Amino acid sequence: METTETRPRLMFVGEVAERLRRSPDQIRYMIGQGTAPKHAKIGGRIVFKESDVEEYIEAAFREGS
Image (tube, rainbow, N blue to C red; front, top):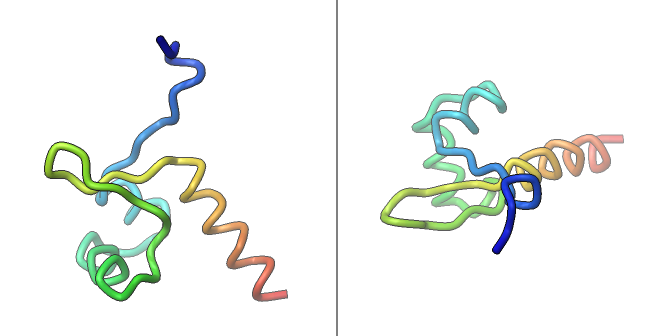
């Protein structure tokens, strides 16, 4: 069994929106367009791993340079 130290932190749409300074509707639009960070649907809710959101941000900086 995984401990809380090895389990990824999960984020919901609202949290990702806040982190990316977007609205939840913009994040949902990005999901539909295929441009959002990696995500999954668990229990009917869209969730993101915090590490995937941070990688998404880092990748944007690498591409922008």
